[in-house]
Length: 267
Image 1 (cartoon, rainbow, N blue to C red):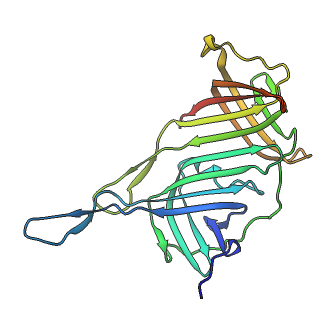
Image 2: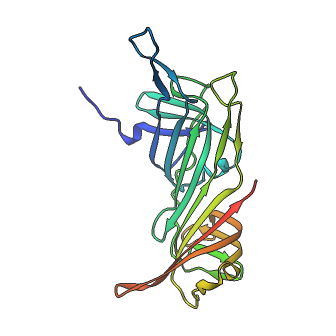
Image 3: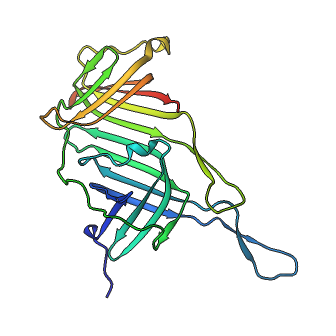
């Protein structure tokens, strides 16, 4: 009899620790095998045309801890995906992008994409350790719980934010093995930060004064738990450039301003 795999039968562990709050998970690979034809042979033979890699992406709620932010650096990670009574393991995964977003009334959401340069498949590539999850308490950001500080401009009236960090990598291969001899973390990292705020005395910048008046030298973002001073997550960036502003108003809602900042981190 056919059956389906339910959500409670699936889980993700990273470096031996269960990841809480996972909403979606995708992993897989595309074969690099290419057909080769030769004189004197009727049948095709196949050979890899480039190094074999795999990819993993996941989206989770910010529940108790952020599992992915620390891997925006040079550190790889391994993991295990359990579904029903089967498991898939992967090794030498490097983050290629990280995202974090939240709107008022929602639970903060995290996202990641990673390239796997080691192994991915059914079986054991390492001995799994305990994958017990952390505390399953759900923390939510509430109204006035997201704080943004742009130099001397400080507001608690942020309605939503979206952060994207691109972490490019370059694998270095040699003739010895199937996996890279080294995976280099490229520099710089590209940062995109988008906000939607309810304005009070905020003034739209003059578009002719780019970039002199639009450089915010310090940008920090703190997400506090609803009705508490407990910090759930915080970010801080320097030399962010204001690249767009959109004033939005209609008869059904109060005025809002959406603006985008871009920056880089050299490593």
